Length: 196
Image 1 (cartoon, helix red, strand yellow):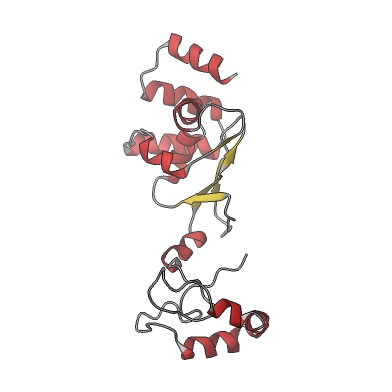
Image 2: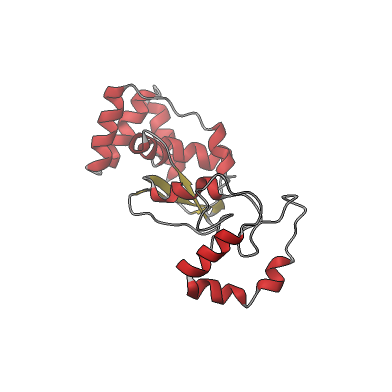
């Protein structure tokens, strides 16, 4: 997969608008192997749909706007797959990992706390039951996170969860989340039964 934003490699220069010959010359100079490879497909690339943007950008660049989130891949982030099996598959990435079209990322603050929540039995149960259709292997729609009710932590709770994540005490994480949401012993047992 090759992702090339508008005006690459000068995509951070806000003064450039439309197709830029200057950007194209820089691309050829800095990345000759990639440029020469794409040059073989220039005619086809130039014929891509212009109606979506209303203007034409460099023939080698994406025609849809996407450059405003490329820096997110080099930040600390939670990565997860669109397809999930029997357990939650969320992880923290600190190594500039890129995902393909079956992966998603979450950037922002309180990522350790959010990871603890997303990998907990309670939130996983809610995701499977209410947002994923309850199947064994189900497609996870990222928009479903918008409807997920996750409590905002105070600093003490956030620090506690950060510590539990770092020491990988997942059973303890579940116990703390049950307390946060005020689950009774009966509700916890029912939840455990549903997930088994």
